[in-house]
Length: 311
Ligand code: GYE
Image (cartoon, rainbow, N blue to C red; front, side, top):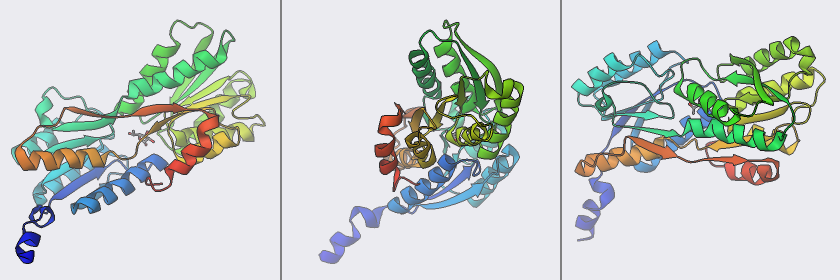
């Protein structure tokens, strides 16, 4: 009887699922953590996870999805680099009856049945949290903002831009004087910030840098220092993700406001997939993760919290 009960225990009955994950690339610390967490969440559930690195190119991602379809995987996860152009390949997945989950970024398609669910934060809200913080922090003083946008065409870049703009609208003392993409990377963030500083009286016209992710903010902090200014004081910073290095910068007084985003996007998608396989339960179209603003006094506890979270 021991043998029988062991055989019929949940673990023994669980299916051996294989999931293909088309990842954007490795542009940021958050992205690397998301990949790490996806692997551990798969291992925890006994799911075989195949990861394809898209190196920031949609065409690579489309190829990867086609290859997953050909391999007959049980589900496909996509972190879509840009929000348009997905219909044809998603039609192919649908014809093959392979459910698709979107991780961390959204897409624009007319036919919503082309994917099962998207696991994402409210990215407009994230941008708004930074904008609201600035409005409060700056009061009536004039403040010229430079913006480092994420990857052009990425849903998160579009949404984070909008949220911040909405928050400062109606506060005429706050102005976005320059806005350009830094592609979510440290090196581009630094490069673009250098050009902003040069164009704006060696940075003296700039009051705040709003970066759509931490890696670009960290690059910007470097550029500010190299220009002989104090990041966090002469030029305030606000960014999104919550990578360990941004908390370190906050502890050093070199970064100000940060919105934390969980790197665990795969976990909720695996949960939804398993439920669906079990009894056909359709997940909600949007599975929302939490976003919260943290300031310097909480930087140490945030940094401590990050250990073992994929970082
Ligand atoms: O904030 C950024 C990354 O899509 C939510 O992409 C993700 C963003 C994240 O490269 O660091």
